[in-house]
Length: 216
Image (cartoon, rainbow, N blue to C red; front, side, top):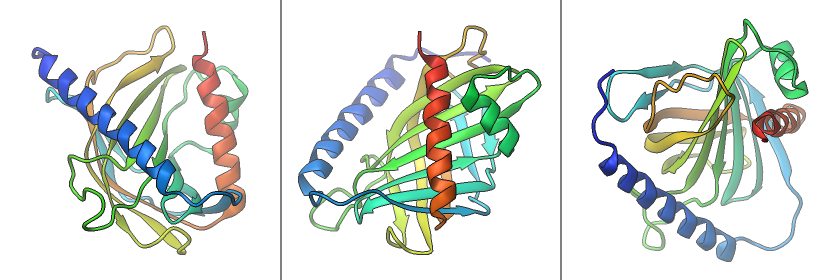
């Protein structure tokens, strides 16, 4: 794939990161103090999404049927999505050999639900942080970034999520032989989940364990 000069993409990515950082600060100021994390999750279709190179050409089409979300309040939720089997998820979490395994594990952190007149409602703003782990025949890569989610429903509903359009992503961690074919990338699609506390808790534990595989 022919790659163009990435300076413009770098500038856009840094601008989005700064907006996300500002959004996280605003969310922390607006959040209600106290309260424990409440679990809500689902096993069902998450809709379709696409992780594509910002330079054109390579992309990954995503359809992750195992979904989950947990929420603290009306402005904060953590959504998990994967197409990996229960056995593959546990192997990834336990640090086992993943040769022959391929799949995806996505974490979407919503830190602010925008309100008209108070916060920006625009695809160039930032209300979610994304971390997307790709497993490809034993190698792992994590793409991370931020974007804006047009929310459908309220945190605590039986189903919750929304649409994300052109969230800015890039490779932020990888095992030694992971082949990064996307470089700077964008994430677009529908992400929705239903309530199921036990699954949400387990997926959150496994995602955290998978991230430890990137430690030096």
